[in-house]
Image 1 (cartoon, rainbow, N blue to C red):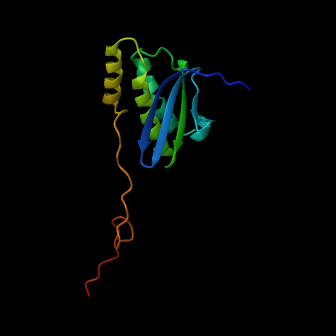
Image 2 (cartoon, rainbow, N blue to C red):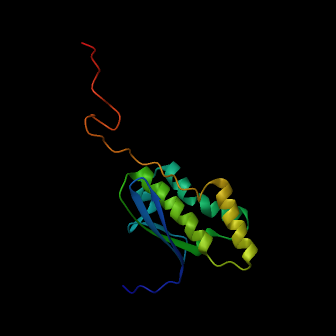
Image 3 (cartoon, helix red, strand yellow):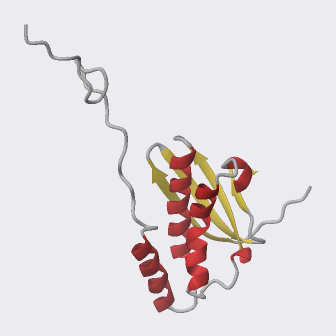
Length: 148
């Protein structure tokens, strides 16, 4: 089996909670591959997660910058966290990578970035699990106070 080298359009990293996603956009047929599996298989056909992954591409189609998402293959390596955290990390990585794609005219690049910002695709959600403190059972859960 011979694999041909595809042109890498952009690379980016997305993070959410413990999940880290490395995203590559290539010229191709529109495949979305996560950890060498199809996105449907990897995300267990979770429709909400699948729609979240495709959302940045839909924005470009609405702006009529990207005529078809079939022109771009998306290859993702993701590790850490759960499926929802991974899906959100992938969404951020895809949006960042799409901002890097060379499009004719600098005003269109600014338009892409502005539309992604307005819809919240480039906003980093920095919430992480709070660490456990000594003397407590969990981060904030303490044993019951007794007066006498």
